[in-house]
Length: 86
Image (cartoon, rainbow, N blue to C red; front, side, top):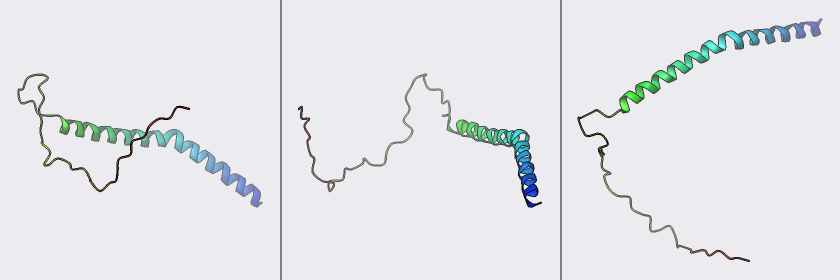
C-alpha cells in the first residue's frame, strides 16, 4: 500500500509541476521581463543628456576629475624580461 501511495504522489507532483511550468511560469516570467524592461527604459531616459542647442557632434565634458591619480611608489622594482629563443 505504501508503494502505491508513493507512486501516486510522484505522479501527482509531476503533473502539478508540468502544469505550473506550462501555464503559470510563462506568465510570471513575462511579468518579470516587463518590469526589468520598464526599469531599463526609465534609466535610459534619466541618462540621456539634455539638448542645450549645441552643435551636432560637439563634445561636452560634464565633470572634471578632482585630482589626478598618483602611482604607488612602494610597489616594488621593475623587472625587464627578455624572450629566449631556443
